[in-house]
View 1 (tube, rainbow, N blue to C red):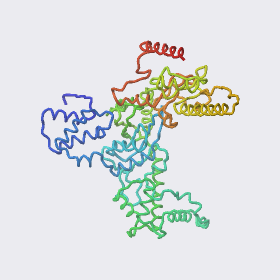
View 2 (view 1 turned 90 degrees about the horizontal axis):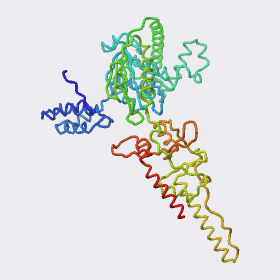
View 3 (view 1 turned 135 degrees about the horizontal axis):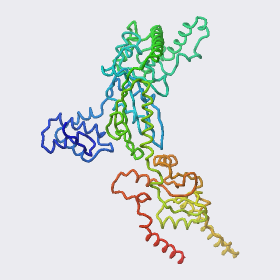
View 4 (view 1 turned 180 degrees about the vertical axis):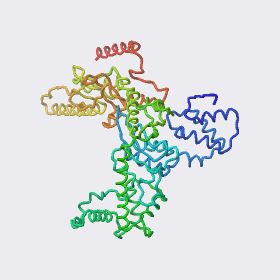
Length: 555
């Protein structure tokens, strides 16, 4: 290549399509379809935040040139292969989540017998299903086996009961670091939910007399009976498939049939108890040998491994500064800021966990500490109310300054409550009821010729009807944390206080948060971070003071 071209677009296919269009190149339907699929893939069907108008325009041009919408509908969202489904299952079972400054980072470290293609799609699905903001998927495999496409000697031995079961074996995927090591076993758990080692309540005490073998058979009999739902004395295919689904173990029909064939020695299509016992015994022997082999390998020099790391980030203002492209460059990787990958060469598979932890630490230090803080976009200085103000005074403030809520502060400017238009409306209704009651008392006193009732003030101070239990946000909190606070409390405004105190320094509302997402470039920002300086607003401030003085003099 002689030229290095960089453009602000969401897809390389967009750049290619634009040059073809300028040169009036006629394309076949297949070529136009490939370009359209490239744009769909790079831009997430035009929904990624890196998408530009040019991407949409070139996608439209590819459609005009005859791109097949049927092919796009079928291939734009690729289906997962058996191996990819296994990786996704293990990833969802074993991922760990760290929440920093309101951003959840999910990580999972897996080991495979060889290279598995299409991990980018797996990571994207894991990101969506885990409800995390950032998802890092790392898969390790021996470098020599990976170069040959996997399937080494070790992979052929793990999780196989008989020679028939080898047909069902693909690349074994297991967790190197997960929440529950038992869930990452390379052997599928055919009977989930009941541990054959913990069904003591179903064990006959007579089984102890026959030694360990009789006791094991008794436990297996209890487990077998538990899943023999129709009490036929056999485990049919439907019962075994239901058990696999309960364990979140994904297996294709072909692999399932091969697995049944490896257990069903008489070929009648169902599993008898003796066949189940033989299968279990064979699995236990292989587990013991695997344990011995793992212990021996742990004493030997480490085998060089390859570690593939895929990262995906959800769109959102709280992850605005996360840049996976820059993060992965230390391993000569790259991609988009929100979707990137890298490959690391390791001396030993045991190094993988430290590498992944280091990436998370760097991500936190370089990206998450740069998040917007409440003090960057809160409304400040903010109008407040005194606890002695009445309904009319509070209502006047609402009308004059067009606000819907006010914090209530004491003489030390510490927040002691909050009053919104709801409290004002309720207080006004109570005041009207008092006034009507006073009128009825006066009318009745006049009619009876009695002395008029004492003319006492009917208005009440806001401290008697304000919200006293108020959620406060510190100015150092991140935008994501305040968003979560507003969602949990179901309020539209939160007073902002200085860190470690109740000193009022500002106010933040749902509108302020929505502005920070910057969905529309023409949106005006009415807050400290984007409004005019105090010096520029001084004439307006002075005018408001004069108007307030005029109102007081004419009351």
